[in-house]
Image (cartoon, rainbow, N blue to C red; front, side, top):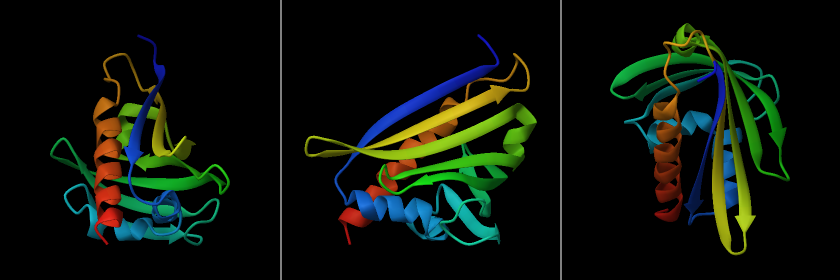
Length: 151
């Protein structure tokens, strides 16, 4: 396997696609209330919520391990309901030279699909592919969707 890769998942949601997009674009600091088992804290470090170049500190748990990362919002597309995050500091950088996560919501007939794309470059061949982070994103999708459907 090479050092660079891309992982993609699609998950259908029952809730409102606009509310879902809003949560990850403008209100990620609400995620610890929605999925405390996964996200422990999200704090704004620089800029404003929902704007390009905002810098966010994120504390989360994956595979039972607590992680801390610093993330910048690199791209926002309202029409496509897309947000791209670039992880540039923290635990992940120990294993990955580059780690970018894109959330995109598509309509397929009457279905709303949440698509997560992780683009990464490993520090070396001994680093595994970030499947656990993709699974965390899928689980977070389900938690946020359940939160919106049950409100």
